[in-house]
Length: 398
Figure 1: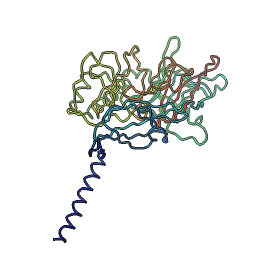
Figure 2 (figure 1 turned 30 degrees about the vertical axis):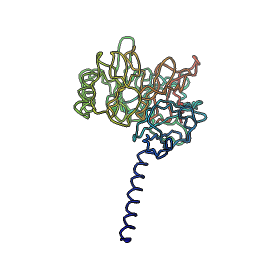
Figure 3 (figure 1 turned 90 degrees about the vertical axis):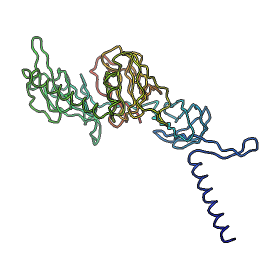
């Protein structure tokens, strides 16, 4: 009999230990309430930051540092992540029992470094569809041999300085390309340069990969050959993006959205509504562990929203879009937007939270371009000196 009791006790302890370990892993905590045993379910808060090693404040109390996981009882918490030299990150998060909630803070420096990319003067920069190359023109009184069209490849790794990352693809030896207006093809493989004179207009097709090429004059064939081909490219691209969606989501997007842009990973859509309406719930029951920022399913025409395809959640970003051109650009991580307005450059989360002004100095128009790896942004500025031609500068974000 004793031989049976001992193994039985061992089995009971193993089962009990395993059960306790599983419950503990799910966030349950064991204690005493009013002298009685108590088992309470908690939620898990995972806090991360870039850069790491930031302080984490829960409801105003310094609790831990990133990167870490905290057990908290269900409820709404004010979470602040702060690091010296960086703007703080703050958000109200809702924790639920046995659910993992994430606080992922991208921290931006309070004093970013400003560095020039060009020195010869830049006009009319345009970003290609891949968000990697910037085409621009140069008209330099001090170095006329450098006048023409240039390509800045932001994916290149110059050995010494970013000033060596640009390549001239057309010079003024054939025509005054330094005064051209530039436009990319939808697939980014071609560049159109339009040169306007007093009584005439010349249109050239450029290859952004060719150094100092002989441009093709497409003035007579632009409307009959080039434009239709580009329109077809754009339609095929738009169709491919929509066809990648689940049928219910595709209908929701097609029926209600005027798409402004897709995030880089194509999981989110920046849009303005076609008309005032209410978005139907696609994922029902709702997913657990999703973004706890309150969403808005009732949408208003001319406002700007972000729709999260994976979580079926919708967030208002702007009350109104007063210009035909959106002042919002997707940040490369697909979790943030760059907001260019009132001579400021703000970066905010895709749900509208944590608006941070990363630059408030002088810059030209809306010429603001995120670097592909998110390490910096590019602006066009003369640093407030009206006597010089603006140049491209980077503003470090890390």
